[in-house]
Each structure stands twice: as structure tokens, then as C-alpha cells.
Length: 490
Image (cartoon, rainbow, N blue to C red; front, side, top):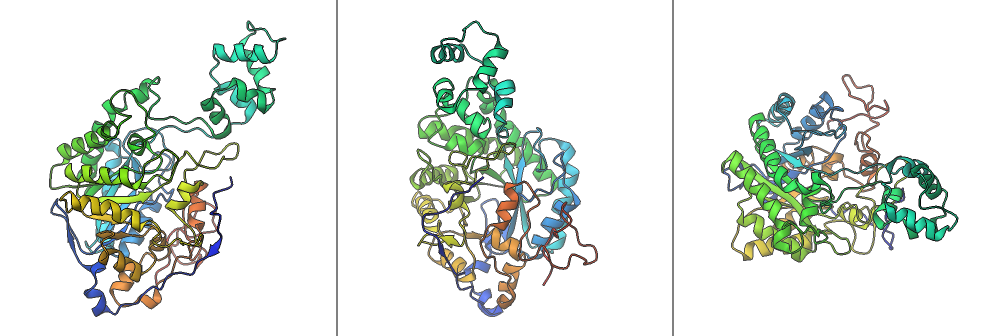
């Protein structure tokens, strides 16, 4: 699939890193502690956000590779690590972590233990709780008409109108065969918009598909599912949970202005916020006030008819009023503008403009990729403060230096700084800066090599280190045998 590229293609140099001495770092905002309303204290305001590394077992269990991945980040001693999006319903999800049943507790408990041990107890560990809807791979056209298209009387009528020689009483098999042989221009007169999308992109569920009982019942199912998942996280030894209300997934779709449900869970803003607030309330009731509960949501959907910073500001105020302990902000990453996948592959929500804005590369327009979304995130934080809440706001997006991070905190864009790609390039970078060793930081080049691996559902690594020291004793290799799975030390 061809991903979005900005109209301007300017190669941007990395921002000045800034190399504070250990004494200067001790006085920096970035390395100051932060106490959350739950009573949990972060040793510093550095944050490794959730990244999906494709290392869980096919059954969603914690694997040795998962443990190694989080151990390596913990050795960098950030203030917090958020474990990858972890499914709250016990349904197949491939090699993605799950937390929808007690059988996952042993592995998750070991994960929490490993992070505590590797960070010397310094790093707080949260787990991101997610629900997602079904999306099918893009089918071969003949297979789509043979197996997936649900025939309707309208198909027969329109086919007979376009092709008078065709009988409306023809068998289903003949109808399917006839449709498969039509030119595109005629298919566009017969198939609905959603059916054409299923042909071109793969069928995808929406939260407003109220004709489907499983979708209609989501408001009755999800509060308890998230609450039980949060309780498992608490029992497993995590310090808190992050409710995933961002990007292309279920809860973000409820929040989106594109949500047209007519049952009180869509339409106007209050109705769209209803389920996210019910989920937050159910989770809080399950785990208590002294367990950290935050959420990640979008400061901008970056799609036509989608959520804006103004919408996000209202959400932030409502989530703060609901008693969430932190608000973590992201951008875009939607299916609505995703590139058309190849046959046999699924649409990927980071291939359109909204995805690029979520993870901009070093080839960008004049604004550049670094800290690109901080102004929008600052707008949300201002709204939360203006409403009288001190809820910490986690900001992210192309933050690649100490100078940037410190400025974001000084200027009021956020209270905590998250960095995914730079932390993947060098899991020790926060610790190195804190200890006055900034000159040794391995710096991300923002080519999105890692994101391309994620797009193909391959183990995520960084090209700056994944071919180094492959013969190192005990090194764990990717399934292709050509890449190491964790960054070398040093």
C-alpha cells in the first residue's frame, strides 16, 4: 500500500539534543517528581508510551520476547512505561496481549515483576486497555462476491436494470457470478458505499452498526469488560491502567463526531461521551481511588468530520471531572483515510494523512515533524486548567531532545513528556540525560522504519541497532533470524 506523503518534502535535521550536566538535570522540570491524585508518585516526568511490538503469543500470552522488550525499556529508568494495547475482551487478536481472562494473570504478573526489578523499583508500570472491532483483510474480488457479499434484493433489481437480459429470479450463484464479471463503473451503481469499501479495503465494523446485535450491545458489555480487566491489572501488580480512547478503535469511535448511533450513545457530544464516561466510572468503582486510572485520547482526529482540538478540550475537562488521574494525548491514526491495502492485507490506520500526523517523519512540510502537535495538546491542557482541574497531561509526538521536552513543560504544553520512537532508538536516553551522559544518546532518525514493520505485523525493531552484535551471547532474534529484538546496551 502507498502511504500518505506531505505535499512538501523537506528533509528536517534533528533538533538540538541538549546535554545537561548531572547537576543541571537535577534542576530540570523533566526530572522532577510528580504526584498523581491516586497517590502514586512518578520519580520523573518521562514516559514511554504504549507501542505494539508484535511479540505476544498467538493466544495473547506474555512471551519471553515480551519480557525482554519491557525489561530493556525499564533499564532506562523512565518515570513510567505503558504496556502495549491489551485486549479487554477474550477474543482472538493474533500476537497481541490480552487481559480478558484470569488465565493471563501469571504472565502479566511476571511482566510487572520484571519491570520493577530492571528499574530498581523506580519506573511505574501502566497497562493500556483496549477494545477493537473486527476488520477483515482485503479479499480477492472473485472471493468477495463468492463468499462475503450479502446478497440483497436491490442487487438483483439493479443488475436486471443494467443488464436487461439478466433475470431477477436467477439463482444466488448466478447473481454472484454476474456481479464478479461486471466492470467497475457498473458495480458502483449496484453496490452500496459500504459494500464497495469491503471489496476495496476489507469489511470493517463501525460502532454505529446498530443492525448488528454485537455492536448494539457494546454499551452493555464494555464497562464491565474494562472494569474486570483493570482489576486483573491491579492483581497482577501494575501501578495503574490507561484506558485506550484513541486512534481507530472502539472507544475513540464512540467519541468521534462521526458516531451517528441513535440509541443515546452517538450524535451530540454528551451522547458520544456517555460510554467512555461509563467505562471510566465502572473501572474506578472496581479498582478504587488509590489505583491509578488514566486515559489516552486524541487532540485531533485529522479526518473530515472528525474530532478537533475544541472537541478534545471538552473531553479533557469531562475526563478530569470524572476523576481520571492523567490525560495522555495523541493525534490521528484513523481508518477513514487509510491507504487501500494489497489483496490479502488489512487496512492500516497510519497510512493516511491522519496517520502521518500521528507519526510524522523527518521528510515533512515546512512545519517539520518535531513537537508538531504540542500546540493542540497545550490547548487541551489550558481548557482543563481553566475548568479548575490540575490533572496531569502527557504530551507526545516527535519529541526528540531534552531542549524540546524541557520547553514543553516550561511553556505549559504538558506535565509529562512521552517519546516512543526516540525511546525505541535508545531505551536509555532519559537516564543518560539525567546522568549527564547526553553525548552518548543514540538518536532516532524519524524514518519510520519501525512503523513499517508494525504495518506488516512483524516484530518491531529499530534500524539503528537491530543488525548489531547478532552473535552476542543470549541475543534474542526476530522470527526472520536477521534482527535482534532488543537494543544493545551502551
